[in-house]
Length: 79
Image (cartoon, rainbow, N blue to C red):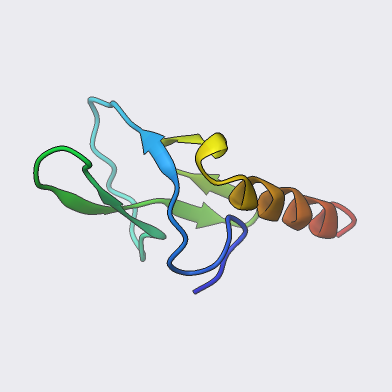
């Protein structure tokens, strides 16, 4: 479904590196797909006004996602 980062199906460019494992319960928010080699996995967690995940997003790859996030913050900062 749509979220603060954009519409369902939008693609973001990112990289990630980590040496830990998360045991967060609940649905993951997005799917990660390697650009080189095989591999996909689910990632991302949201609680109240926090979005957490390992990927470091490069918004230059999708400025609409950046603008969508700014709109979300502007709309929700008064709550």
